[in-house]
Every structure is written in C-alpha cells, then in structure tokens.
Image (tube, rainbow over all chains, first blue to last red; front, side, top):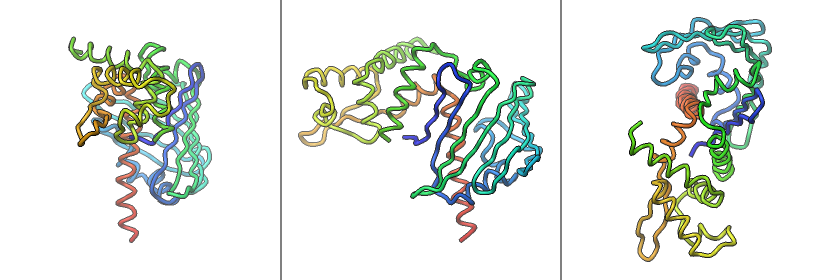
Length: 156
Length: 113
C-alpha cells in the first residue's frame, strides 16, 4: 500500500502531503529543481507535458503545459524561497483560473530511511482548494474514505 | 458506469461504512490475516467478526484462501483501487507522480555510482 499521506481537512483551504523517499535530501532536491528531471515526473501519466521554464532560484519562474485531447492546461508560478536540499516556497496558478494563486511550501527532512518530503499548500479559498483536489463526491463518502485512508496510512 | 459496477460500488461503500470493517481493511493492507488475528483487537464475538468478514467478502474487498487448516483473508487491492479511483483521482495521481520520482531517483543514484 501507499505510504503517501494526504490531508485535506474539511472546510479549510489547505492540502498537506507527506511522503518518504529512499534517497538523500540532495538527490531529492535535484529531481525537484533540475528542469530536465522535473519534465520526467511532473506530467500526469496520460497527458503530454511540456516544461517551458523551470528556474528554481530566488525570484525564478516556472511554466509548464499539459495537453490532452480536450486541450491545453498551463500552470505557472514564482519561486519565493529556495534553500538547497531543504526548502522550496513557490506560488502556483492554473492559467485557466487566473488570480486563484496557491502558495506551496516543500520541506525536505532527512530520516533514518531516506528523506521525507512535506508539501503544504494554501489555496485562496476552500472552493478553489476543493476544485483543484477534484472532490466531486458527497461529503459523507469522502469523510468515511478519509478515515479509511488515515487508518491505512497509520497501519502501513 | 455500468449498473453492475454501480451495485458493486454500493456494496463496497456500505461495507466500509462500519468502523470495525474499516479497521479490518486497514489491518489487511499490511498482509493476510486469519479470522482470529482479525478478531483480536475487538471486544466482539467470533460470530460477529465472521459476519463482518462475510460482508467484506460479498463486497469484493477481500478474498479467502485455504492454507491447510487456515483460511486467511486477503485484501483485493484492485477493488480498493477501483473505489479510491472513483473517489479520489487526486490521491492516485499524487501517488503515481511519487512513483515516477522513485524511479527517477533510482536512475540518478545509479549515475552517481
């Protein structure tokens, strides 16, 4: 089972994702910041992805485009803080919803096994968070599945 | 979605609406377990545990095999994945992305050696 923990607390604009990798912080930082490497993991499996720009440094910008049969989806943002092997803080915006800018903080912490990636996102509203995460289902089902996922995450 | 799939989803959600059954699924996510092992954390009768197992089996979330005298229960990962993919594409996409990162880290490490 997956050891990824995703928390999307109801009624908040937050998304928190935690995942451990079997690597050193500097190896993980490298695949998070090298444009050619980013290209290899960024896009969803069945979408074509182009990384136009990915300049991971203070004030650097990024823009990438996913394409499928229905069209193009472009995302862009600015790197606010870059502390190599430790921390990246950046903005994130889907150009299809201009102005709905999300703030993302990615921390890398060494662990016994490797490195833990902790990603915290703050959306401008609960609605935009929910739209992005794509929860289209009834609250009750989501709630019970969240509890199940938490249990599995705890057990795993 | 086909009517059969809908019925199967209904059964799966109904099965997971119960906290004891969710805990059993969580336990089985770590590996197969016998009825006694599944019953251990709960202050309920073995009959009640057997009924819970039957509900999970009917919902297609677990299967039982035969291993001598033992009949261990196994999680059906595909069933759970079908359930979660219907519910939470975001969760799956995040995990897929992390798996691509795992593969990439492996090739980065091989280059470094």
